[in-house]
Structure formats: structure tokens, C-alpha cells
Figure 1 (cartoon, rainbow, N blue to C red):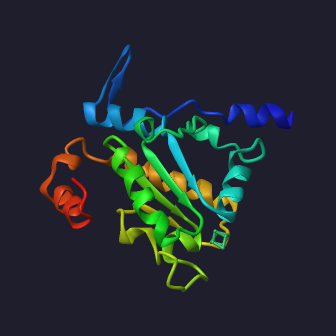
Figure 2: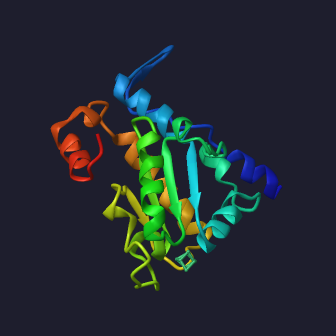
Length: 186
Ligand code: SF4
């Protein structure tokens, strides 16, 4: 019985806002593209330490990130649109992370998971980058050391909201170009 209740709550995907009536549905291209992007995010896990282990738990069957259309991890930047940075990033690793970001095609988003990736965490030392936003732009931060899988899922949902509502023209805007210039990214 409980299983039936769970199944009845399953949704394949919500259609975007639009006009609908018997036999027709109309919406804007932007909303349709946003819906498709939101439900097919391909993450690239850039895991360097313990937060990566928590991410593995999030991917496993108990939490199952695949429920959000993100089960297809990409270890090639060119086939990924969400860079998930988890773990301590040493300054030596900074240029590598930046190169991975630069190799990703637009549109691309960045999720910073845990205290280390977001701010250096407890490692306030000369060798650790005090936050990845010093070298690449970050869209969503997940606090915690380590964050629980529920927080990782919440972070992904925040990214989905951004992806769904992003204008198709945002990446061509002057504001976005200025942001890239600020980070020294072509
Ligand atoms: S935030 Fe905590 S759990 Fe995550 S990588 Fe840093 S020390 Fe490890």
C-alpha cells in the first residue's frame, strides 16, 4: 500500500507555464529549453577529498541523484554542464580546476560543495585556496563539513532553479562577458 502511495506521487517532469486547452499546449522557446536543461544536467565531479565521499553517498541508491536527471556523470569537461567542486583545493590545483572550467562548453554552472571548496574551510594556510570563487565564478555554495547528502540534493535543486529560469541570451550579455573578463577567462 505504502509503495502504491509512493508511486502515485512520482512525476516525470512538470511542463513549463504556458497556454493549454484540449489538444494543445503553447509556451515560449525559452521556457521549453529551460525545462529540458533543468532535467538533464550532466555533472562533472571534481572531488579532491572527504566531501567527494559524501557525494558518492548522494549518488548511491539511498539518495539517488538520478531522480533529478543527473545520474550521468561526465569526467570529460566537454560533455558536462555542471562543475561540482568538492574538497580542499590546493593552490597548485587551482590552474587545473580553471582549465577544466574553461574546457566546459556554455552554458555551464558551478556548484561549490563544502567549507573547503567554498572558503578553504579549516585549512587557513599558505597552500590552500581560500575559496574557488577566487579563480572561477560560482553559482551555488553548499555549506557544511561535510554537507549531508540532503544538502547536496538541495544544492542541485537550487542549480536546477537557476538553469530553468536563465535567459537564453544571458551568456551573450555584457554583464556575463564582464564577469568572465574579471576572471581572466576568454
Ligand atoms: S569541507 Fe570538511 S569534509 Fe569537505 S573536504 Fe573540507 S574537511 Fe573534508
